[in-house]
Image 1 (cartoon, protein in one colour):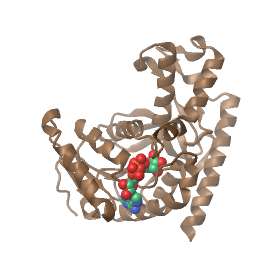
Image 2 (cartoon, rainbow, N blue to C red; image 1 turned 90 degrees about the horizontal axis):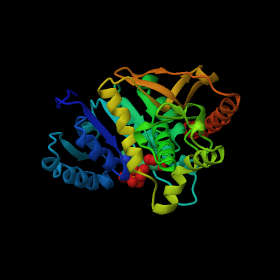
Image 3 (cartoon, rainbow, N blue to C red; image 1 turned 30 degrees about the vertical axis):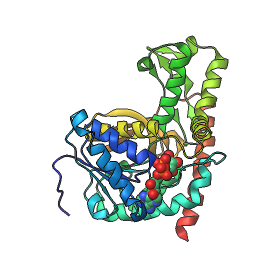
Length: 319
Ligand code: APR
């Protein structure tokens, strides 16, 4: 189908908590015209959120078009697709507990994207993240450079927030990245965390750093426990928007995300959180950095957990 929009077209699959915020953020940043998609039972919610956001456009001065829909014809030809379709966690659940339900949903979404948006840059947010990105890539057949998972930006942003808060410094001056799967064994790489260029270890006691590492690992669960009815949505949406922006504006940003590893870090044919260069070619490069023995070991543990989940996803895909 021919593109009907002159601006980049952004399709958001899932019009729930994250989907609605993605739409609002993408509109405010004028990233492109937006289709907020959901299943037929939820189409009116997608339409209601789209209309509500449209009605803020005069206040913010944006011209982007926003449409709610349950029809994949409206998604067709999108340049960027961000997928949040799937159940979120409830208190007491791990991300892995969502596998059974969300793998079915991801299979449905991916087979539709295969048909309607084969050339899009696809950012997956649904959990368990690493297995969902794998499922998307496998079922859609979209090239690996154009299928990526949002986790590392969020996990790093959480880490940076805790560091800035503890040290009383501007968040703008904190840099870090988190590697590995988006689970409780993710690997915040403290050696590469700096504040205004100064290594974190020179500014903070080890016990405080360890506490921040632990709080980051459990960061999603902390919010689930507070919200009680679902999981985090503002920071996940903001993180995915940063990735979409890097692609649309060919920014060549270096962002940690779940990218296909082809031997980097000793990982092959696996989507795992690694620093990736994102520009107009999608994930243009996975950046390999030197890790301490302890961090490499922790990354291997996290990757082996991702592999187990991918194996489980594969079993369900074969059914
Ligand atoms: N196609 C499109 N949308 C779907 C489908 C499908 N096959 N199945 C479910 N959805 C929609 C739901 O109708 C719902 O509106 O996905 C939306 C999910 O929204 P929420 O329940 O509000 O969940 P949200 O907080 O947005 O999180 C979505 O992201 O971070 C992860 O763990 C989180 O897996 C969860 C996902």
